[in-house]
Image: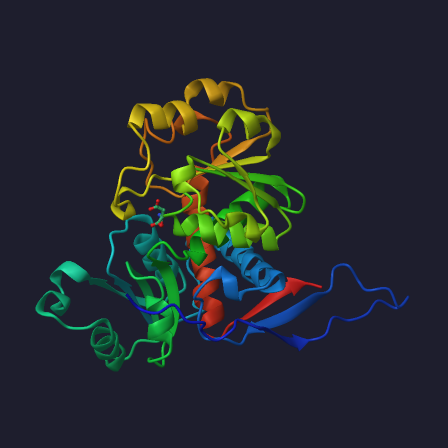
Length: 344
Ligand code: NCD
């Protein structure tokens, strides 16, 4: 397993100060140009609130681009990124490919199965060889926690963590935060409940960090076998009974049972899991009218959510996927040296 280290920090560099209004009071409309100084996005852990907001504000601009008849801008013309995916993916890999093409950026897709990794080539050799062909950015998904951090110390290209084992999945957290802000206005003071396999979910870890940094009160709920024993130190509440907390929250963030990372049985049967922790049709009917539901996908229908959720008007599962393209455009743009604009 690759050691999980700390990559360079992601900092906001102020390029231009906002114009003060004549009265001396800050003009509410003034905007600050910001540039992210780190070349990498390795985890939400490394970002502070203003850095997260920089990415989300930039994503809002790109979200508008996606609604145009020709949804493409020349922002990264002449650049190339590679999707280096050592684990299965549908949404994330497609989303990064689309994000790159909407920015006029080339994107090469690497698949572990058909690569020389099957002949024993290492992660570092693979990355260095791809980089030698002239790649500006490497988007990596790997089963080993810390693989993107390791790579970031050995390549010149910028590195984006697209999921490292059960550790982090920063762009999923950013797109979830973007989608929730679009729907709720702000996460400040909102109660977010994450339900399911917290222990094995990289989304849970990144979301907990991201939502908390944006001012939300985060709670987790699941079977005791799927909740890390020390999780309260991250400032979240823990519940083992879903019906005890479901009617007190603004957001229900359902998570997939991560079968591929579970070594022994964490719950007796799927039927019992659904009965205790599933968002069933009955629980959906009893949700307060303004509560929204998210899920990063892929969904195990009939396990963590009944299929009724797909038809539920306040389920944001597909808007999350659409917004993911805009958020990844923002990440690629900013890491490639673009300047973001944030309200001062
Ligand atoms: C997530 C992942 O891969 O961690 N999916 C995704 O990126 N859309 C969540 C999951 O697999 O459960």
